[in-house]
Image (tube, rainbow, N blue to C red; front, top):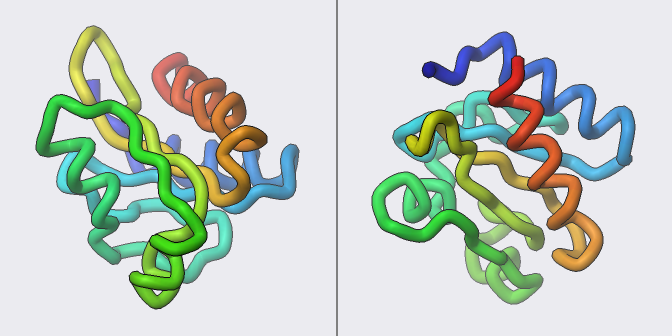
Length: 114
């Protein structure tokens, strides 16, 4: 299964419009391919790169991480999008982790069904 640009754009737009939380979708290289804010497409995301190139499936970014990266990474959570036991991309949601973790998990599941 391959994560398409069309699906990535639709899910990023839908999640932002439904929740008010900005989100990103990354491809298998960790590069952002969809951004609800429209500002970071094409940028390699450090956290998503780590997810795609290791055994970890989730990374939490703190407010300190956001400051350290000069805003390249946002406070929130990034999780692997899994399809048939394989990572096909990543989904990230900016915000307080206790709030955005469930949103990220639901969005990653919806991506696979699309």
